[in-house]
Length: 82
Image (cartoon, rainbow, N blue to C red; front, side, top):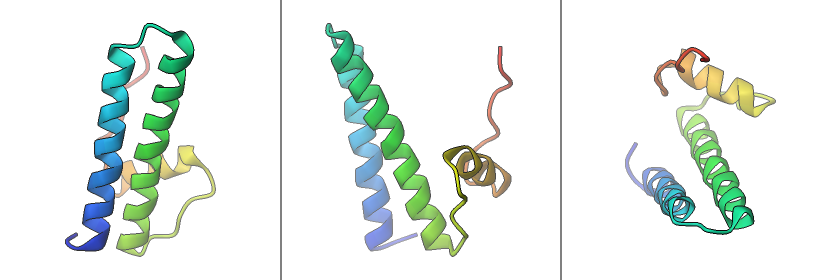
């Protein structure tokens, strides 16, 4: 996945990583919540871009997006809930 889409996905994931680092050092609960929320949204956006690049139909929900990414081998299977 070279070119524009690969760079776009990389930038989205880099932003998510930066936000996670902000969470690790946040003293304010609202800042922590916001940065976690945006980091998760960044990862979901990257998955949506990847689906588009692969020519896959985008599922109607984020839950299905993650499940279909697992089924398609794009993401490793989720850990079972504790």
